Image: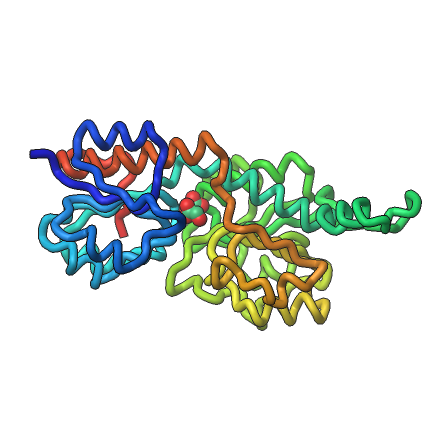
Length: 322
Ligand code: GLV
Ligand code: GLV
């Protein structure tokens, strides 16, 4: 008989059809993420799990799955929702989707940067509500990219693509901070590797695209915001956990930094009464970095292929090795 896979959300038909050629598929079809109780009930004896970043895969889930489970494939590039140590311990393979979403996420990051730096939401609101009296020389002015210093924190696929797109706006320099040197890509893009503190001190725009790990957790704390320019724009499209959000609220209120664009927060969704929603110099988006139709379809297909390859004992298109 075919191996069995549990799918935690409704995914694209093409990815589902691909899975069904090789597996017995059962899915959560309710609205929103699968409740933990349902996941625990349905994972029992399955050979594969196709999950989302909204599903926490921990020892409880893995124990419930039992010895059949061969692969956990997430339809995301981020993997902080997976207890990778517990998964590894059981010799279960991990699949993820790093390539498919690089361009869409970098495009969103640049869009969010411009939305924040040029005050697009604030300005559109003024136009819609009568605040627009007449064209005025210094009204609704933001901050331009030309001649600026751009700082990229996390110079992986996405960070590099953000830098490539931003380079066309003619900043005077692009700095990056990354655990390892990315000499070849940096040379091609024209980016300079610096320390974290130097990046904070010199950048007019700080864009974050680093994975959430114990090392990066809350790396943007009060001290970090304090080292940034008062005119700096901060953009985060990675994970909310990299930021001490209370420190960010304080920095935006006090003018320690100029503005922030966030596609990710803690928690998600952000409660409606959260202070970040009350700040005009903050743009909050609902975690839509990879939300382009073709991209999400591709992510579904890559996730299905990761599962099929792992079940067949073949090399997975994108295996996460941590
Ligand atoms: C999105 O945040 C992802 O990790 O794919
Ligand atoms: C992170 O994995 C990235 O691709 O930037």
